[in-house]
Image (cartoon, rainbow, N blue to C red):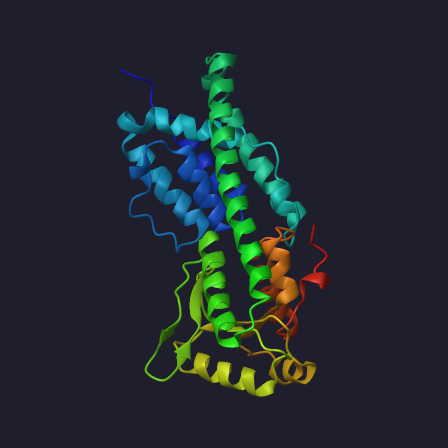
Length: 307
């Protein structure tokens, strides 16, 4: 009879999985690349918090250990092969998040050392190389798509037809949010309003408003957008992307403890398209700043995180 996996290994794996990535997009991609048997992820509630998602996956592996033992140790190998946690450092409390991830991975590594010591260096190298190749492939796809969207953005800047430019901007934003797995929805009409789009970020629903006008948006634009949000479910937020910004008095008028609005301008968008900052990092910082200060606009140039 094959030796069973110690339950402490499953517990350590569950914790490490929840710690190694902050954003669910990265977390989900890592799992998809690391698990050769995709059925393990079927029916997972990705809207849940990461620690619960990790627990769901590990419980499945443990429950069907006779089928998934090799898969489990392949996943563990992928986790303990991670040596660079710099993606956590730029977050709030980044040093703490990095330290916790390293500690969780080291704990898992210690518990499984005996198992992996039995594997040849060649086997370990081949497994690690396979993962790295697949990651490079995914990175190339991501970079290619971002370059395509950046070129489209610059092309839109030459568009003379303002209506066409606005419509194409909506499509560009929808494609960008699709790249980041933010569950975007294209423009639609509700019972009362025309909505430019919507998306989901960190379990919160957002309405989207896109503007590319000659001048910065005035207060009435924010008034109308806020009223649209008010006719949606409670806790719905809104992101206004105005390429030429918003006038200061409109920002002041709508800033406050209970404002549902966040703002992006063209400089913010270009920083994302040029891959100087990740979209999910940008949104997290904007929402965090709004929660702490009440201000609805936190420009990327003030974040100190742009490459």
